[in-house]
Length: 262
Image 1 (cartoon, rainbow, N blue to C red):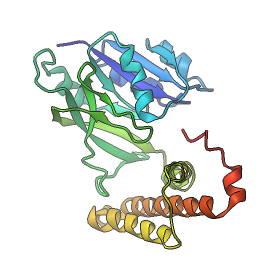
Image 2 (image 1 turned 120 degrees about the vertical axis):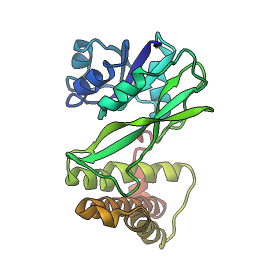
Image 3 (image 1 turned 30 degrees about the vertical axis):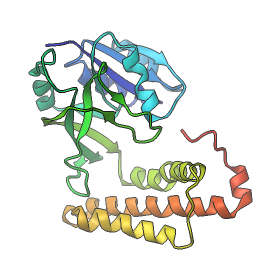
């Protein structure tokens, strides 16, 4: 089996980094953490786990995730977020791959997204295929600063899962949707020249809720399905409402720091 370098980007991930690196260490011969200025014990814990830590101010999602692979010793890279873990099946499946001779340049794993300890299988949250194991000589993360993904020409979907501990609880999910997520999205849209009108917030909010709850089966997932759909609707409503506010209110716009999006 070819050697693999495991890569994680971090910012204040002391609660997650040890478990993430332990998971990667089951299949990787090298571990790299790219840290963007953690003020907690993330760096010390990562080094104690045997990872090489690279300090890099945050560049945005894609550029940041390409820093570690550029410094890797091995051709194949397995990229996880700090709140993700390999399942036993994923470890076995990856260990059985013939990476030296495969025609594929990347491999995708299904992602199990959790709220607390609850695996949400509806709302488009499963199967949530993510390309995470890839040949860094043939592909890389897109140069997108938000929600980047590996750009591969010959990917293959593995029959195995990642676990993604998305939110500690419902409060965190709604807090992020109404706060950081919608703030960032509104600022990005404004800088790109996108504009909203008075009907945009309600229209986009309702559309996001319906997509998650009805078309992606959230109604079959009980309270968690309803909550995911509502948080998606809240996020969509607020990002367009905040965009409209930036357009209309010079005082709000002038008080915003557009250099601190990422």
